[in-house]
Image (cartoon, rainbow, N blue to C red; front, side):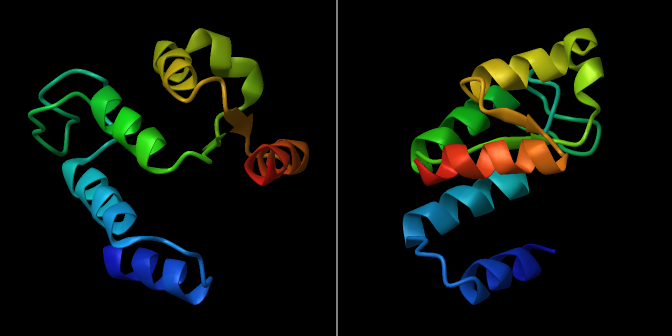
Length: 109
């Protein structure tokens, strides 16, 4: 899975530095997507909360968005979504055509 991800970055001919690759690799290995508490998700034990990893990612990649597959109508009912939306500086978009269009406009600025 990680190899496929990094190959897709290379094949897309994106300019990604070694530092950015390492940041991504660390985040993926650590299970960035956890409940925000130290100790990690049900699959991983992390010494740091996921929020710290998300902050590292947003610092390493100044242009970022979060594409959320959950229906946007449910976002206000999910505490974890509100937390991620805050950590992503409100750069969360629904996985819809208009959402993807808005996300791409944000990334192109």
